[in-house]
Image 1 (cartoon, rainbow, N blue to C red):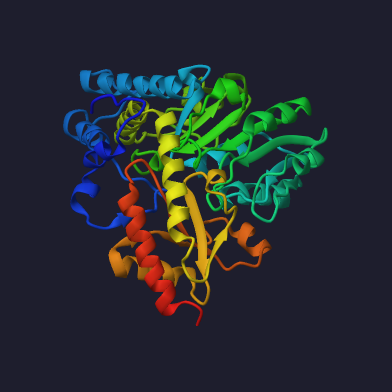
Image 2 (tube, helix red, strand yellow):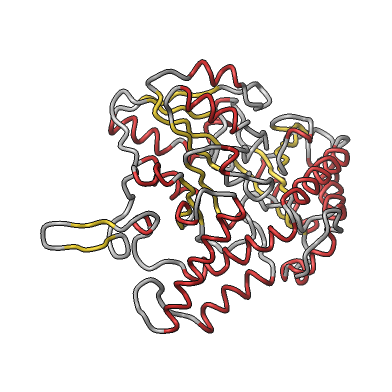
Length: 409
């Protein structure tokens, strides 16, 4: 793929994605999982065809090549996210595993407080609820306004010297609202707390600079940023990773083991137990390089243009109510909504049936957000770099027909 200009024509990218070339539907479910370009698929196939062996253990030439590729992928991640060092990037299965690694590795005890927002994914609630019940930690919450916008004053009120960790999404997967993470980190550090960011919805859509944000931990899912399934990353400042207990133990995490002692491997190896997803790591490097060539600033601009266009096309849809802010500039690439008289799953299935429009429905693994607002769920349409206005037109036309024919009953 050639490097694109800052004022690029995003229509050029669609041909890089085999799903776009072969499927005649409209994919608006990228907040769940993105499609993959040819270069990522080729990188995964390259591992299985040319280097289908284990890295970091054997010393033959195939294993050495895999080990080099693993190192190169960490270097690519470090460059892309401006991390402190390649060793600050730990391979995980997904954001969920990354969050759990921090949650159960910090050694939180009775009386320690963890602050979240009221708009988190279940993966950023369940570990803290579990630790509340098992270890006696205190779980606090920064409350947003009715539209889901982050309230920094509410966050400040939740902070005191007992807070050990602030754990927040950078972008909500329901409302698309963005949290000012840099300001949050500064406030948290002033109180002596560490900061963990769920970046699964932010990292694919905006420039993320670890040094500038000054966060202690950052979790992300590579499968939401053009990469293979089963691949995530946990970024951590080296000193913070050094103070973290591993979530799993075994091969690859140790230096030397005797019958009565264990010497753990240095960071990041101590967090990567067992044989790794090497094909996924190959694909991760290809995904990062693809995004790097397109440019995150370009992606952010294109996302914003598509969201503005989407809002302009649905404003007259009968019985439509938006979940979250009605200003498209306050949403990061997602539109969550309901149609009067119809359940979210019904709308999603009808969209697929009418014109192959693929969206998400339900509570989007953000149950507390919906339960607290007495909303049963929503339909979620999410855009990414391979979508265009034609996709939005088809979505809006199909949605209008469904609302007019079946809504309000």
